[in-house]
Image 1 (tube, rainbow, N blue to C red):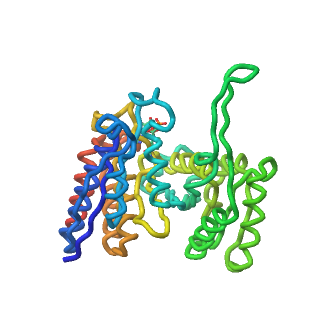
Image 2: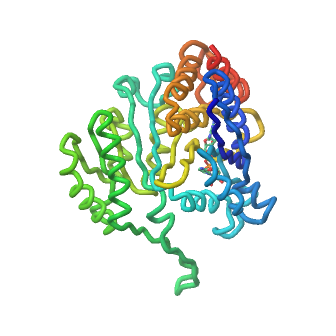
Image 3: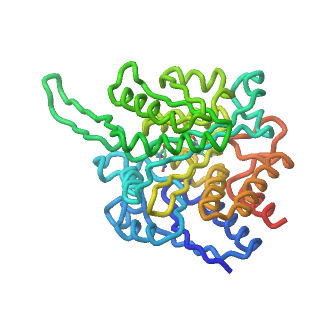
Length: 359
Ligand SMILES: NC(=O)c1ccc[n+]([C@@H]2O[C@H](COP(=O)([O-])OP(=O)(O)OC[C@H]3O[C@@H](n4cnc5c(N)ncnc54)[C@H](O)[C@@H]3O)[C@@H](O)[C@H]2O)c1
């Protein structure tokens, strides 16, 4: 029996709810395929602040480093919003990405035929299909650049710096090219090169790399146009590669055109440490504690986790279980329900998927 240790960061808000549903699914996978998944629960975010005074305790970082993979729910919430930036729950998130060197965030966005009714786009646009991957740079750019706040001539002034070097651009664009090469061979590099110097370096670098990938069609798109094109014609996209902030914003948009933010999974990968797998949504304080959260994004993140452990059959079983529940039953969480559906909570949706794994 193969043994795997998964560091589990339940987090805040709906984090513990979606994680609990996902751990049941992973346990069912273990039983079916003969693996032992040991879950090591660790603190990060608001719950870590409450228990230890800091959003990312050292113990959490070392437990994550010792694991085979990290599963994260979500962190944050209004309770901690007034704390200074470096002590907020989100500092834990940035901290763990930096500590594990997770520079590549992979966010697939797929519109399942069974969820066509949840897609807010016109049917003629949705019918063309949505099947894209956002490759987002995760440890550079404005979220990690120099920032400040001081009193100025006209009152308080604040700044954040967008900064990228060639190495950071090359390593993320390499993942973009390689991901596109394994798919429909189209890479859209999204920047703001008409205004930003950092984007001009990004564009120059990605074009210099294109010679190594003659089978991949590379196109540039300005981020404002990309925001529009994702709504106008999302079928045109195969793989998108972009900076930390642009990727953060555009992947939320990509999630909504596929039905709900509660559906989108992600993996964050580096070179030396285990990967981190998390839904792209936040802690959703508005629905926390009400059994209303959609666990599918976290469950599909667990499928990505299994892939990272080279457990391809097991990952397929999870994806197929999600697809089967959506296509063969009328059960939906509230965020993806429409006429004729039976609304279920996070627990029930998790159980339905888990039961499918056993079949
Ligand atoms: N990776 C993370 O941990 C992460 C990511 C984004 C935001 N946050 C934090 O989460 C908190 C709330 O942020 P927000 O409200 O801007 O974003 P959010 O993603 O938490 O919620 C946005 C909207 O989507 C809904 N939603 C989110 N996930 C859902 C799910 N699984 N099922 C059904 N509906 C879902 C919420 O109810 C809300 O209406 C903030 O503190 C923010 O900093 C954390």
